[in-house]
Image (tube, rainbow, N blue to C red; front, side):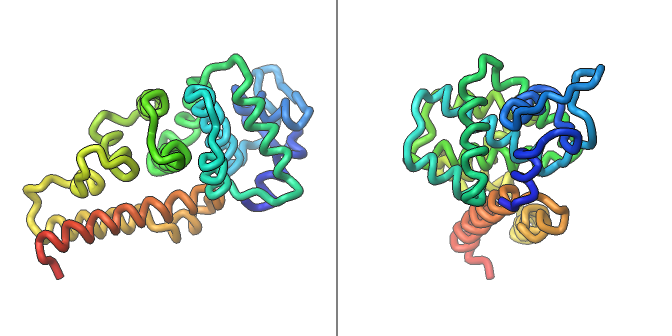
Length: 241
């Protein structure tokens, strides 16, 4: 994670305007509660801060729902949210505070959903990141699965889209077609077109070009790997070249 994102958290104040539950959380960590008459922090809202603090807060609430944080989940979290050593303590405070607060996860999820309502791919990034953390101990437990489904609902994803996201991480039916969101009835040319569209939509370079934080780029990289693996399996079955 770049110094810029966590520098904003550490010196939150007038430059940060997350507002809502995420703004209150960041303000508590930074020791600032610069609230205006409308109840939100002053200044513009940096999208990378909303994305990353939202991911951290939702991961913390997921840990609370599961009741335990394993070393493998901590390592998976570090894979996605890369923090300079000098700023790690601040991120840990953010995680711990989000986990302890009596506020429900729904407020954090709604704020992230509202911030990126016109960019559903970013909302998928958040869910992919949460799945990566949840499955790090070898399984997505029942409480985690329920939690992820509820977050997906708040994000506006229907059951079919959530099933496709889940299939990238949990081999419930071991169905590569579900990973691609493709029907088995597609012709070879239609399947190739679907695959190329997914690669273009989910390529990490696209996330970099859009100025997204490293956490989003890391998630996009893993998602593209899952898409490629699913297509490779189908291509082998169909003898595609």
